[in-house]
Image (tube, rainbow, N blue to C red; front, side):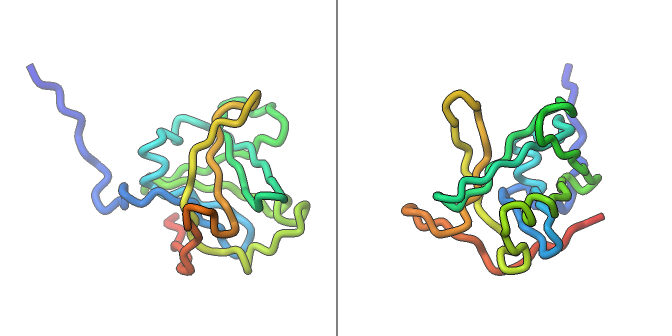
Length: 138
């Protein structure tokens, strides 16, 4: 006997897997990334920054007491976000200049586990951000 899962993500852009930096200093995780990587099961995000590589790194966790853990906001539309103004101020990054969509790479960092990485400058593979800013759906 069949037991189908009801498809409820009508209109969701599930093929879009990116992270958007918003001008006010937040990160927006596309519905496609949240769905593909099952990020909705996590309650917190841990940020890291590599100044040499100009890369922002994201690790997801359910440990609210983990150092640097930021609560994630999950929306009915399937996307998620985190507020991170202090991160931009601490690293002297301008979210207005950096605002836009960025492709995401999953990387295994020795002794730190799996992280999602956004490179702020073009990489050797030619990936770079797109200029449009994604509208946040409340």
